[in-house]
Image (cartoon, rainbow, N blue to C red; front, side, top):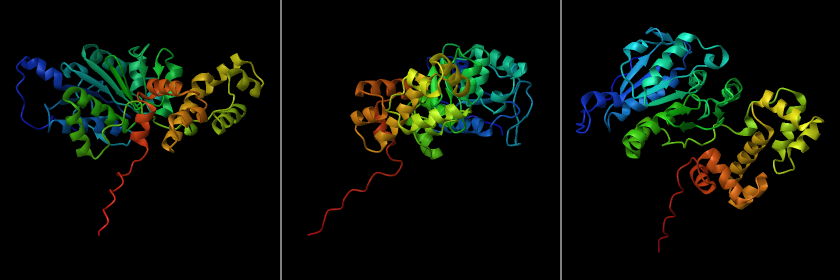
Amino acid sequence: MRPGTGSGAKPELESESESAADRRRRVGFVVFDGVTMLDVSGPTEVLHLSGRVAAPYELVLVSPGGRPVATSSGLALTGAVRPAEAGPLHTLVVAGGDRLAEQPIEAELLDAVRSLAAGADRVASVCTGAFVLAGLGLLDGRRATTHWRHAGELARRHPRVRVAPDAIHVRDGRYLSSAGISAGIDLALALVEEDHGADAARAVARELVVFMQRPGGQSQFSTATAPPARSGPLRALVAAVLADPAADHSLSAMADRLAVSPRHLSRIFHAELGTTPARWLERVRLDRAQRLLLEGRSVTAAAAESGIGSDETLRRAFARDLGTTPTEYRARFRTTGPPPAATAPRGG
């Protein structure tokens, strides 16, 4: 696979030098053995197609040694250059692969990303590419996301990263991260919209026959289907909370149910679920509120029946975790089907 530049005539940019214009359009993708193909092909296709409606991007594949790499599916990516040959990059994208979350990351890959990120205006990761950025300390004190299956490991391995475990994509300063696999397409559409406007991004989305575009805060998964706790007692507690999120689930009440101290319960949650009891309960209740809204409940009813409480508390939770309001969420995600057909007037 050799990513190419987008097609179309090159516009004149009167206020920029030629080198500045070239740099603004150059996007480097870091790849490595075991990389997930769609983490590369999805975003590169978005950026390539945007060249039909806006100034094209120059796409550059970079591997640590400038060698071809074998993807996780066994197919090869060729045409990669060494980091020193990539030229000045405006945007750097680190693709993902399961091994980044499951094995130590080799120094050669870390060094390659470190050198490229230093000069880039934007640095992004797709899926477990976030482990590389976090391993370099670039995400310390920042919000970031990754595939939901690896979010707990990212939080455990890098406690200074504020992991948003179920966001589609997150931006914090010049750093962007996205969830797994297809979420890289959402991230790339967001980049196109930032660079060329919403009309350009919509045109690309239509060409790719994808939704334009899932908001960064849309949930990757339901808390009810999140990875389960390992121990029997905690699994039973989790099941009880999921069955009735609005009941009394204070820290002391949950600790009493397991016959442990609140402090020990917090340690168990962190070890098995990668979060605190309070944060986990908040996500359970927010997930329930989301489903209640989609079932037709009012904001007030969803807040009460989920255990969140008041309308205002629910609005704050939506703004903080999902980047939207309850009303906007319901309007956007209540159905994936076409709008109902208008009722035809009856003949006389």
